[in-house]
Amino acid sequence: MNTSCRSGKFIGAFAPFGYMKSPDDRHKFVIDEPAAAVVRRIFQMRCEGLGYRSITLVLNEEGILPPREYRYQSVGKQNPYTKSNGKWSISEVRQLLHNEAYIGNMVQHKNEKFSYKDSRNLAVPKDEWIKVENTHEPIISMDVWEQCRSMDREANRPRQNSMKETSLFSGLLFCADCGYKMRSQIKMQRRKNGVTACYENYFCGNFSRSGHTACTTHNVSLRVLSQLVLGDIWVKSEDVFYHEKEIAQCLMERRQKQGQAELSAIQKSMRSLEKRAAELDRLIRSAYEDKVNGSIPGELCAELLGGYQKERTENAAKRRELEARLAEMQTVKNEVQEWISLIRQYQDIDTLDREMLLRLIDKIEVGEVHIEDGQKVRDIKIHYKFVGYIG
Image 1 (cartoon, one colour):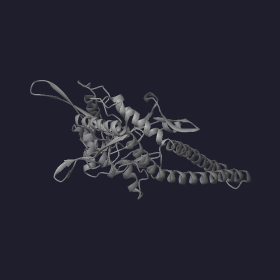
Image 2 (image 1 turned 135 degrees about the vertical axis):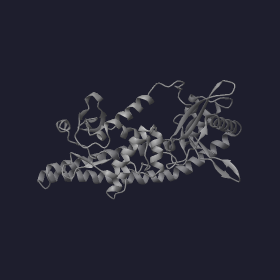
Image 3 (image 1 turned 90 degrees about the vertical axis):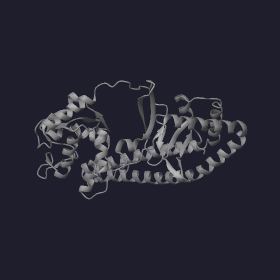
Image 4 (image 1 turned 90 degrees about the horizontal axis):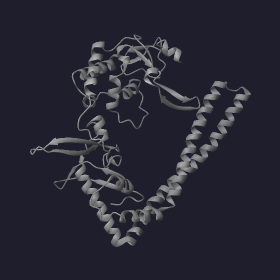
């Protein structure tokens, strides 16, 4: 494999966006002009001073297909990666602008397998990458490439006033509409009296990554969110103080009702996995017998066995997860009592801290602002540890 890399032969599955594998030699690149035009434009925007995020927004606003979507649509297939939002991301733009393939160089051996038994990839140190220059026609000139590198050096200068603290709600906030994590943004603003104030807001990570064609801002300030969460903790702790038995009973009944539907679904999944496990055992035995009898070539047998073993391992992991979930569902009463004991500890708090939030809260879903009866409103759902969203 490394011998092919050192000779400048491409050994990957897909050519970089802007190229395609040569029909005459799959180890070489030829320019794919429609995609190459997009590549040239991205480099031009960078040379004009646009940052990665600004370039990403332009591409998404104009409806330009990102590399993976383009690759599948160009062959008339549906993108099988269901988690993809079909938009350009900042990381894709950044990677493209640093890919030496666009100046005619072949750079490979950036990752390697953990072992022949383990398919995980390990990053290879940069000084061990294999680079062969001038292996194919470049899409951009060296002048454009160097201008982009100059832009990178300018952007990477140390910045003053960087906030190195972990954000109060980091990892707890999620967009209620697309499910992405929220990202924090800190702005330093000088007031008229000369005092510099710090303002922190949270935005939908999908919007921050791909712009308004992916989702909306869901912008909420740290101040407003803190007041809302603190108020909800006060209300819940006070309710528990005065009506503990009623609340415990209500929560247990609700959890048990929700759990019944989940229990049925888990049991159905378990039966399906057990049936498939027995079928996989049969298929594995059959493959071994066919190899011994000479019915199938050894190479095909190895491929079949690899697929069966992989599926069997994945199914076993799924069964363990379902079994663990079944065990969790038997502890409804204990979980409700644990939450009650926990929330009572915070009856007299007047400020939030991160340790408290991590103990109390599983996640917070932030909805977008909308108009109801002429008023701006938004839905924010706090999901507590052990009991979930209470309302």
